[in-house]
Image 1: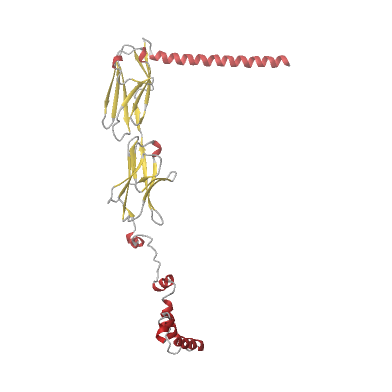
Image 2 (image 1 turned 45 degrees about the vertical axis):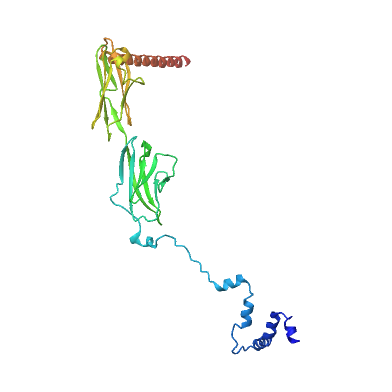
Length: 324
């Protein structure tokens, strides 16, 4: 009959029935406060731990340690001997002609993961960061060849207001900076014999334009007569010869001068301030007489003014005497 009963009793009940005496002993020992030689983890505990929460069991099995990422790829950057430094051979004074490109060089050794920026000192405007341009003025550009120490700021078509100090900055703490001054040279043009020139009609006259303070010959030299360009006006006897050397000279020659050739002439080189002269073509008049005549007319006007002033004073004096 016992075999018949055991066949119908679940195996889990049988296991609990077999371990029940041992469970009573363990419970009694723990209540008495003296576990004796009873192990900390009994087979019963191991049995119930088998059915415990898997998440809790995973937490007991693995220890997770949080590792902070390094603030820099290489800790050597904190070492003074591995910090970036500027090349002392870098030129800190750059001169560029008006209208041409200017190049400001900044050489940095041991740059590592640092970033190079160019800042205009006048208004602290950030121009470039790395190889990117951060200004709406597209004349500014950062030039850098991978693997070199040179970071160059290029300014195309330089203008007068571009002159000033620019800073090459490195993103260290505190920031490193190197100041470079840009000078924009404006060439000057002069026409000897001005501001007025007097010539007789029917003759030939020459106007010479001398360009100075230029670092390179001008690209062009235009001549204007009363605002109209005449470089190619050969039908009126006009010819232009330009010598582009260390001191550029342009000569305007006009043959068979007439009254139509009178007026204002200007020499306008590329990237330079223009020069002006006024030409008077005379038909038999004496230029000296014209000057004296002008002075005589001026003296006559002064005489009339003085006479009118004296008459006004006498009139006021007469009125005052009558009133008394």
